[in-house]
Length: 294
Image (cartoon, rainbow, N blue to C red; front, side, top):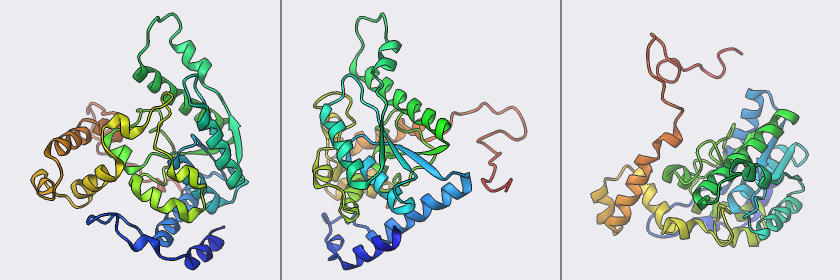
């Protein structure tokens, strides 16, 4: 599958060379996709898996992740789960089915409404944040249960923007065994998606975690990914200070808010902190190399 992808990319015009703004987040499609495909195949070999399972929400990130898996492994080893909640938008399921058909992968539906309802049985009022967190964790339960049943590695689809902003549920959608797209900003994924022949509808639709009907990421966050990705790139990748990014034209209130989000959600990007008592403590000064026992 990768050789045919290489040939397709080489025949396409280099639309990636045009910068989005003066802060250029464009990436080389052939190099980037090749690295991610090698990452997927290497990690499956290291972990002793031949099959993968991933969630397919009908959104861009999960569609792009599934397309990477197909180009790395072919369609047969790839299974996608669609896991609608009672409050999910029916269009999300239709979009997930569209992606699965276009990629030729197996799509398994495992609704989570019963799990979430059982969790809150007897409660008269549950706010939308708690419902969203419960849904995200119920979906990850389904993915890891499928992994155990079919020995398929769970592949995550959280992008770099979400990871840095903490825009995800700890041990929910942030949980996975490997994540091929976690070092790509949302806008970079949108740039690359066209090179994997994803349906135009999926590429153009507003980003949404599908927490409730009409919910969008940018509406909930209060800023666009195009703006925040450029800001994150300067703060994280280029190591600019707050004063330096403000001097580049970013609103200080936005900068302060984003810096606070990055700092306050660091726990979501780390393993649980363990109190140190012994000479060698897991996660502090004992880091077992993944190939140590091989």
